[in-house]
Image (cartoon, rainbow, N blue to C red; front, side, top):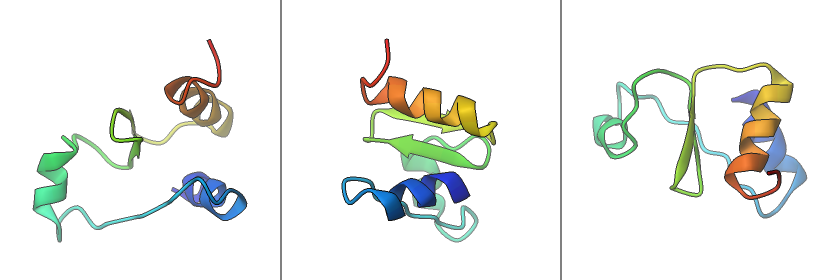
Length: 68
């Protein structure tokens, strides 16, 4: 979560929100949360669980078309 929020601080095109899954069960269902953290990218991709920073960045870039 820290890294996702850092992205949002650094870039106006990125928004970072964090919600408590037990308080918002409709969001858990909407985003098919199986584990936490779950990072949703552009409503079309998601990263489940904590990853090392390099892997997180790689997956975010892949999700937005930044890497092949």
